[in-house]
Length: 169
Image (cartoon, rainbow, N blue to C red):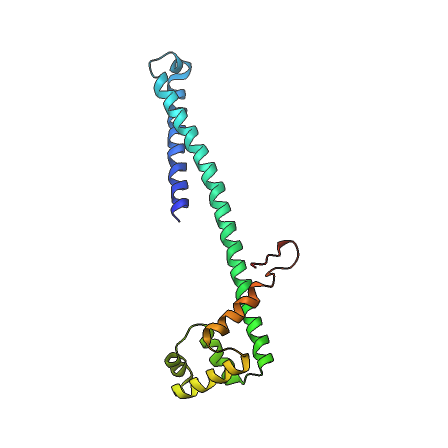
């Protein structure tokens, strides 16, 4: 928003200077070069050209920023989808029950035992039992290892196929 506003303000200023030059030229004609206003005219032309160049460069920069933002958003969506797919594959491999899958999802997202219990409408002891079963089935000792396992696998696989393929590892 800030860069767009700056481009708009500079465009307005460039238009002002160019119209002032134009009206000065119409008013004075070729005498404008022989009058004492030559320095003023040169200054206005230089300011207008500088503003026009600034608008061109800033517009190109804004377009590049917007394209980069779109690319990063797309990458995040791909990574999010890949993490979800990876989690589902692990849930199937570990043979987690639907309740355990639900609890595992909340745990991976960083929810505390109390928060998971509240979200699921169950006792904290039940959530602890589910978490212990998840860790046992996954072959890890806790939440940190569980998340590490998922991230490690996610980083070892390219997020895109073909020309845009990138692996973080």
